[in-house]
Amino acid sequence: MAFAPQIRIAATYMRGGTSKGVFFRLDDLPERCRVPGDARDRLFLRVVGSPDPYTKHIDGMGGASSSTSKGVILSKSTRAGHDVDYLYGQVSIDSAFVDWSGNCGNLTTAAGAFAIHAGLIDPARVPENGTCAVRIWQANIGKTIIAHVPVSGGQVQETGDFELDGVTFPAAEIVLEFLDPADESEGGGEIGGAMFPTGNVVDTLEVPDTLVPGGRLKATLINAGIPTIFVNAADLGYSGTELQDAINGDAAALARFEALRTIGALRMGLIKEAGEAAKRQHTPKIAFVAPPADYTASNGRTVEADEIDLLVRALSMGKLHHAMMGTASVAIAAAAAVPGTLVDLAAGGGGRGTVRFGHPSGTLRVGAEAVLADGRWTVTKAVMSRSARILMEGWVRVPGDSF
Image (tube, rainbow, N blue to C red):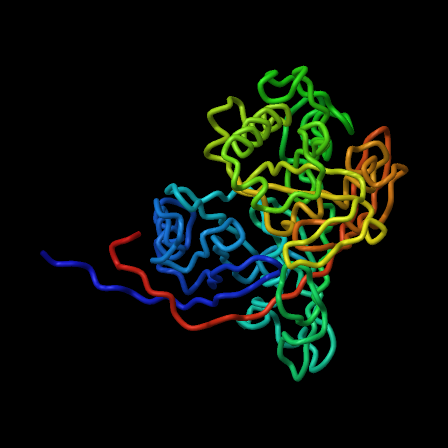
């Protein structure tokens, strides 16, 4: 029996923020994978090593977590005012599925750096020393993001002293600006797509008594950065100081969060019936919030209550995230800027332009500009800092008949 040989595809393995992924130039992909469809999905699955019933990704580039099972495609943009188009795929670990429904804020950092590394930016726009503003069109959600990438000697500066909780070593700081981050193409609800798709900053969800005693759960449903469902930790019996093992080691807790995520997705108009949630694992996110409290982060450091404005824990692809997703950080910033949301109330109320929150790996500071016009809240910009660097570059190899 003849077996197809492996083929090699030019690729770069990068860390961006607290995530890692395999980056491709669109033109370097096999021709049938340059367009959306089954071939592209199967290629991403094989590169990452999914589906893997052992959930280890031994036979691929993935890291067996939602933070490390990712693929990115970049190309020069034909859209006016933009340098590159950035497309992101979240690869399921144990099923044959790639979710293209949202962005990865962490890998957006690496997308800005990769655009320069890969020669996708006009050399005239890259200074010898200074900062290059890479204008990114985020193709998954149709939004503009500007990555301010430090440059030294005409090349991306990757080393530095910027420290990011959840990342072991310091690196150079990259500032991200998410312009008009509310995704108004998403959602239904009472007033159609909007930052708050139901028109409310807080909703009361009707849920089974088996999920929440009393059958009612307060939630802030927001489309900003990524569609996110925020609930109060106390309403679920949590403190907001939990680390990964407390949630991810509890199958019943994970099932409850997934059930609540499905109810929230229905209320936001993101899905039409509950069964669709299984094919929309990346969005919406679900997160729980609480007022500040002392806790021990995953690296053993004590985070003091007076260091932070609130506590946030978020789930990604069915598991508690080890730090915080970049896009969820945008949602946190946007919700904190609007008075009366559960995020704002956990932070003390009144709305704020910047907020520092505690997550399982430490703390993060984010900011957003919110505007109320005609009774409707919008966020014009959200800002956060991350870092990125190349881990390996060359070729990734996959069996030639795998896609």
